[in-house]
Image (cartoon, rainbow, N blue to C red; front, top):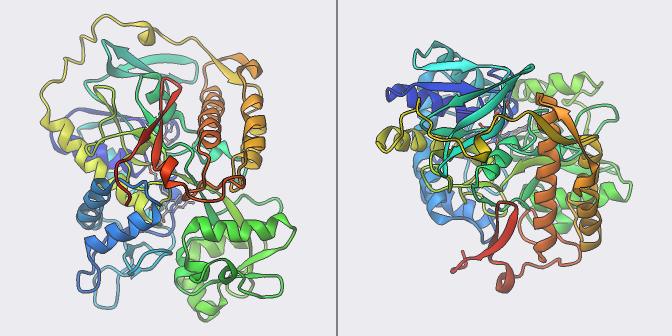
Length: 514
Ligand SMILES: Cc1cc2nc3c(=O)[nH]c(=O)nc-3n(C[C@H](O)[C@H](O)[C@H](O)COP(=O)(O)OP(=O)(O)OC[C@H]3O[C@@H](n4cnc5c(N)ncnc54)[C@H](O)[C@@H]3O)c2cc1C
């Protein structure tokens, strides 16, 4: 298992519980992940008196703008409640309601309150609980600070990965390999994601020959901190779900100008609404004061309060300056409902994967649900199969199994991230994207020693290229992908996925409209 977010940790535990020997390798510490930064919660239809898996499916599909895989949505809606119960049993300290059950909150574009949460640091609660269980598991060997560099492929089957630790390059040979390496936020200059989110796993899967789909769909979160010198810290969507409002400098709630649902319409709509104002030089704020008294606000959002206090802001008494930032990748390695990629022996779980759940836009809090549900399903699949070759006899290596020595990477990955934010961010057009694709041409690469930094810089470059190419190809606007020069959704041409195989794109059309 490569990666130690919610997907990798739960997959490792489930595999170990089924008697498999698991090596879990991750490029930082066990708790370095996007998961550890998640705030809002996990979506699951837990209150069956008011909610239902069918309503969860309907909301997911409405957000996905025609590109959701209905079966993937059904699987997640049906199985997420059991996974949340499992986390609670494992010791995740979810916030409870007065009757002792799990408290549920509401987020944008959900028709019911169905988000289980642990105060405003749900991800940290999940990450630390699962990491403790993994460390205690006899079936899992943990390797921290090792970075996956390239896949070992033999006879069209993935047989493991090459890793680098400091200066040493070494192979880990495995019967099955699962990438749980998270998303791509760092490919954009302004992002809510931590430093490791550089798309490594998607590219490793691509190198192994796996199909990669829907990469143009990047979700931009509407409400990230916008204070000079501060990172774009996320201010959770539940802040709006519980009554926070978005206003301009005069205190006007302008989101209603763009959508009757105001601040609670889908993320792409709110993000564009805010972006338009920020682009023309207006300041935009998230005002939490309508939620309740200063004490109530501090009690509900203690981590956000502490994070903003570091930059001189009191969220309980002052509006918070905000602007959108890159947040989540709907695209990734194409998988089936067991997390299998199109390469034998290679799985992709969590944000790195494209199961089809999110379509063109993710519903808030569906990503942790997807990580957990597919981790359990992949473990069932891996444990239930008996066609696995012996791990020790990897067979004759082909070209991709050769030991990597150096790496081609761009000299300045931050220039790429800046160019991506400008041309492949919230508003895109042919002119900007064409300029971007020429900027990303390979003559900017140089040879470097194998290190985590070099791998990440290479990933930023390769991921940027895929996203820019797909965004240029898709001449319409849908979900999170907004083309100023093609502002309408075009089902006649574009009810389709853009699928890359060995860097060549093809357009795969759908048969039905959802
Ligand atoms: C600020 C923030 C708030 C969020 N809030 C929510 C929320 O409330 N609800 C929700 O559902 N979602 C939320 N999300 C999204 C959600 O957190 C992620 O989609 C989810 O946690 C991804 O989990 P994962 O296990 O797939 O990947 P991650 O948690 O990102 O873990 C990836 C792991 O892979 C490792 N890795 C990567 N590349 C390599 C490599 N080459 N070699 C070795 N290891 C590697 C990383 O170090 C890391 O350990 C939020 C995201 C952010 C950034």
